Image (cartoon, rainbow, N blue to C red; front, side, top):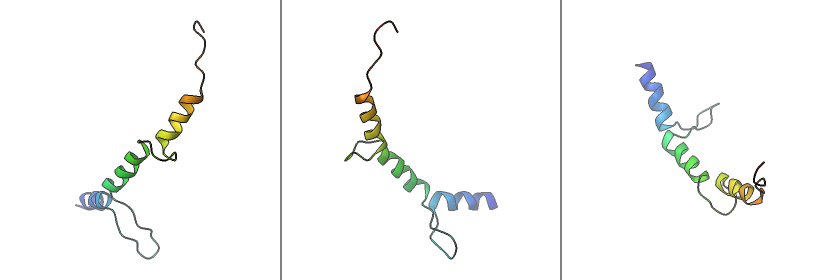
Length: 63
């Protein structure tokens, strides 16, 4: 049963307590990841990839 309890704490997250920071649950962590995969005001991972892609010159044909 201990493993099920640990899984549920990881899934739901936990509140901050003495000596331990709060841990977000799985759904909150997935939402943060999803946020990074969509363009926004320029600070997401997707925006960074788009900037790099736009500034890289493709190699000439035949190389």
